[in-house]
Structure formats: C-alpha cells, structure tokens
Amino acid sequence: MPSLGVLLPVLLSSIWFLRRFVYSTEKKHESRDWKLPPVVELSETDIYQHPQEAYQAAIEKYGPVVGVVRKNQLEYIIDHTLTAQVLTNDAMFSFEHATLRMLNLSVLLSLPRSFAKELDTIVQEDITANMDNIIETLVPIFQRHAQSLKLSRSKSDPIAVDLESVVHLMMAESMLTLIFGKRHATPENIHAVENVAADIATLTGIFQNMGYFSRNFPSLWRRFIWVKITILSIPYYFRIGSIAFRGLGAEESNESDSILDKCAKRYKAKNQGSVPFLDKIWIIVVLLGLIFASVHQTAIVIVWVLFELATRPQFLEAFRKEVQESTNSDGDLCLTYASLKKAEQLDSFIREVMRTKGDTLLTTRLTTKDVPLAGYIIPKGSFVAPLATLSHMNKEYHGDNAKEFVGGRWVGQGKPAVMVSNSYFPFGLGRWACPGRFLAVAEIKMAVLFLITHATPRLKDNAYRIRDPLNITSVAPEGDLYLESLKD
Image (tube, rainbow, N blue to C red; front, side, top):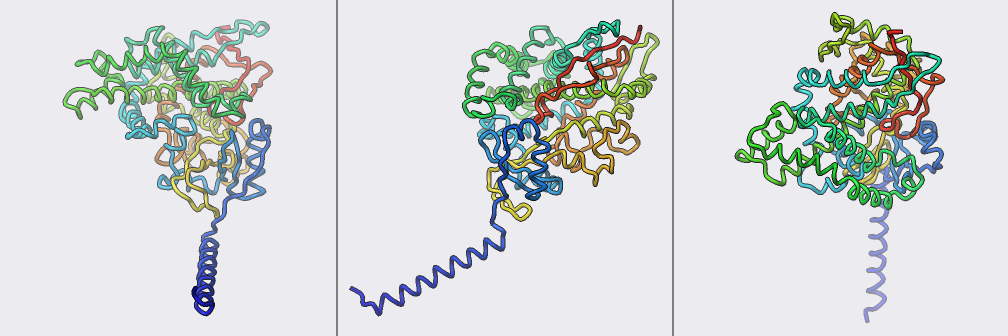
C-alpha cells in the first residue's frame, strides 16, 4: 500500500484543485448572474379573473421579469422595457415554437417545413399584394350579411341580434370564396368552414381558460379534445380537404384568382407541372390554419369594435361622413380598398379599441437557448410573454390620458391601425407581426360601415361582459346588441 507520505500530497492537491474549480465556477456564474427570475404564486382567481391587475402588481413588486405557473406550466411575464428585445430577437426567442406549442399544435414542429413561413408566404403573396381585387370580391358578401341583421323598429321593443354568429358566417363565406373560389361558396361548404374554424379554435385552447377541467387538467383535456374533434368533425374536414385536393390536382383551374390556385401554380412550377401528394397534404394543413386565423380572430375583433361603438354613439356621424363620397344615387355604399384606407376617423377608432380593450398576454415567444434577460437567465424552452397593458396603457408612450379611450387619438398622426411598435402590438411585433393585418382591418371597416349606414348599434344598459379577461384577444364580449333602423 502507498505510504501516507505519498497519499497526503495527492489528497491535498486534489482538495486545492477542487476548491479552485468550485470557486472559479461560482465566480463565473456570479459574473453572469446565473439566477432565475422570481416565481410568483398567483391564485386561479387572480390569473383568470383579474390577470391585468395581478400580473402588473407582481411585476411592480419583483421587477421586470416574473415567473408564474399557469395550466401546470411555468411561464415568464415581462414588462414594457423588455418587449422589443423579446419580440424582435428571433435567434433567442422563437415565435413559431411558442405559437404552435401554445396552440396545442406541437406536432407541426416535427415536420421538415416551417408552418409559419408557409402561411406568411401565402398571405404576403396572395392576399396583401392583391388587396384591391380582394376587397372588390368581398364587398357584396359583407354588405349582404350586414343587411341580414334584424333591425329594431321601436325603441320600446328592441330585437337583440346574435352578432357573433352572423359575423362568423360572414367571415366563413369570405375566406371560402378567397381560398377556394366563388363557385365553392355553397351553404354546405360555408357551414363546413364555419365548423372547421370553430373546431380549430377549441383545439388550440382559445376557450380553455373558461372551464375548470380544461384549466386544471390541460394534458388530459387536450387528449379529449383531439379525440372528440377527430370523431365528430371528420365530415367537415373531408369536405374542405376534398375541394382542396381536387383543385390542386386539376390541370386547369376555373378559379384562377383563388389562393388555392395560386398555391398550386407555385408548387407546379417547382415540380414539373404537378403537385406531389405530400405537398397537397401540406398545403391543405396550412390553408386550414389560414381559415382559423382569418375567420375566428377577425370575427372576434369585429364584435369588439361594434360593441365599443355601441357604447360611444358620438362617433357614428363622423364615420358616416367619411364614406359619403362612396355612396351611389341609391344610397348604397360602393367601397373600395382606397376608400377604406381614407376612412381615417374609423381607423383611429379601431386602433384605439385594439389598444385599450385590455389584452394581457397578447403574444408569446419560446427561448431557443438559456437566455440572459434583465439580470436573470431564462432557461431554454421557456415561454416568455410581455404584459401588453403595460405598453398599451403606458403614459410614457401615450401621454397622461393613456388609460382613457380617445377615439380620434390617431387622426393625423400617421399611425394607422395596422402599424405596430413596442407601444402597440395587437398584431404582434417584429418579423412575425401578423401579415394578414391589412386585410383584417379592411374587413373590420367594411363590417362597421355597411352596418352603420342603415342602423345604429345599441347595447342593453350600455354595457357588455368580458367572458375571458385573460384571453380578450380571442374571446368576444357578451351583451345584448340592438340595431336601431335609421329609416324611422
């Protein structure tokens, strides 16, 4: 056996080396501030009933980054000073991974293609670049559905209208026409698109906050929803998928202006005149995503704007005057994309609705690595979301009256509703700001203008109820809406 005289120096050397290693590691971690943000315990009532106040109080107490457990998952909430850094640094904070995981669509991340990039390409090339023709196509659809709403002929006997259902139906027909072509806009197909949009909204957790089971057992709830939709909604998906499949396989299209036809042409140009089977499936999946985003999300914002307008009738006359020159001799509106863009008073009102309606966790990102942020380290694979109200209601950005609704705030400011910044991001921010926001705002304007030219919206008791304070973005308010005829 080795003598103590040999072992002692080796032992002391080992202790010295280990001590130096630990010390240097501690210094290294200390210099890089290797610490996690504080995790704040919020009650279910705080999170789902008073999220704006609860999250803001936590940030004010603990600093610009706080961790909160929601739906059995830790996520980090940041204040307005970090918004631009998180939402625009795509190398460290992934939009696509965050969005698809948050919407229970993680399976799409395992594919060799980018769902977000494909959808962005379709919207940019086939919608945004063709807005004049698209608005011309949609005008009669919006006008017809607006005029289908029942009017109250007497203030003493008002008729409540189901605005949300009508708007969803209007958006379903509009997107069906744009994506697949006018000849496919049959009642059966419109019904299928409406159901597909509703299914995807449910599947992606849009209404998850509103149920005890879905909030507290999210994994089990997701499995249940997948099974339910798979069993009950196959006919709707099959109908939409078969239309797309036939269109992508046709040699010549009867709907040369449809988005489906434009997609087919792009893929045929890359594949010797045909669309491979897997590409057809891929296009169908992306178009289903477009249907959800365009039908459900836009419909919800239309409801929000009309409810806010119903509580503020003093703006109606200005909006009606803005489009007087677009009215023909019969008193009908003849809207174009150019006339919609000129409606600056209405545009300002829409921007103010979207700024002040109370969005909280409006958009989110997922860290792609361990990320240093405000003196902390956010672990890889963590959700990070700015508290939107800290930007949208910030006096530093919007003046002393930042928390007040000022309908004409943006008139003459060169900041239309579609323009995003770190002080206003209802459509997101950075590379992944919603590419469809130009169409969405135009559709909101059409819906409002066609309705108010023959009716005045009113709300019972001049008030509405917020159904989901944590997800105002995607859940419409609730209230009894009446439409008073202008002809009386």
